[in-house]
Structure formats: structure tokens, C-alpha cells
Length: 219
Image 1 (tube, rainbow, N blue to C red):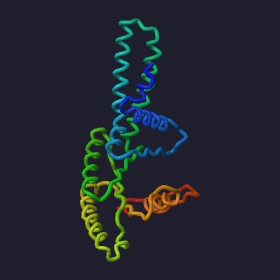
Image 2 (cartoon, rainbow, N blue to C red; image 1 turned 90 degrees about the vertical axis):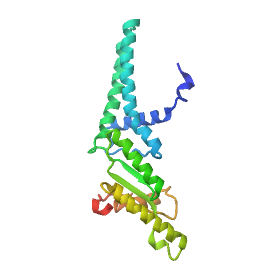
Image 3 (spheres, helix red, strand yellow; image 1 turned 180 degrees about the vertical axis):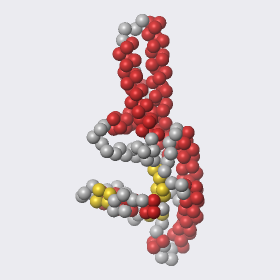
Image 4 (tube, one colour; image 1 turned 135 degrees about the vertical axis):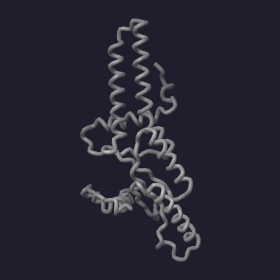
């Protein structure tokens, strides 16, 4: 009925993406679902969406009931049943997202002023949704072995060290993992294996198993 207008609706892509994510949550064949989101602002909109959508569906059900009473609509029960079903799906997603035993949030940041401030803001916003973030990944740290008398890298290294101290102070209650800056982009299986090894302490794509890491490994 709405034609192409529905595609151009604000957040239409995010709504479609999260609806697909909810489908994965309902899929009993998967042991783990990884939801890799875009930068912080975009991620927060997506994470807040099921909360907003559940409230929207609740209002739709209420409005439909009121409209049915006035217009004597015949398809009311079927329509409301569908709305109730959709609302139940999103309510379930909300419960999963808020359950720290089922869902782990990891915020990725750089050792720099603005990323740290953005991460603090994200933590505050997620807290309002009842979400507890327990793990952090600090990316693109310059390895000390790569400096080798390079004045520019030495200064950048010292700057990163300063911000790492702030990160440990501000986010130290969680688990902090650090990743070095690599020589190449991470875009294929081999570089993903390198990242997996550094995060999990040993990753085999052949066996598809990872050695569990503990707080000591990540601290």
C-alpha cells in the first residue's frame, strides 16, 4: 500500500537488520549469535530499537482495539494476534539483550581522547537501557618493538600509553583486551586468524575451536 515510501522511512534499514537479528535469536540451531554493529552512535540506535519497537507495537495494539470498537472491523482478532506475536518477539529480544548471562557487550575503542569520551557516553546510554558492558577492546596500539628510534612513533607511543592509563582507570572494572596495530588491513581469513589468536590466545580455523581466556590473560 505504501510502495517505495516504506523503504525511505528513517531507520528502515536498521529496523530490517534488527528484525533479522531477532530471527537469529529465535533460531535454536545457533549456539552463539554475533551482532557486529557500526560505530557507536549507529549501534546505540540499533540496540535501542527493540525497546522503541516494543512500545510502538503496544500502542498499535491499543489503537487497533479502539479503532475496531468504533469501526466494527472484522479482521481485528487476526491483526491483533499478529501484533501481539511481533511484540512478544521483541520483548524476548529485550530480555536477552539485558541478560548478562546470555549477552556480552564489547566496546571497541582507540587509545585517544575522543574515542574514550565516546565510549563513556555509550556506557551511560546503554546503562539507561539496563545493559551492562563488561568487555573492552583497545585497538591499534603501536608495538614498542616497532619504534626503533623513530621520533614520530615514539611520541605517538607515549601518547597512547597516557590514554591507556586513563582507559584502565575509567574502564578497569571490565575486562580490557589490547590489540596491536597491524601492518595490513584485517580483511581475509589469515589476518582474522591473527586477530583471533591475539584475543583468544589461540585460534584454529581448521578445528573451529578457541581456547577460553581468563581475566589475567586480558588484563
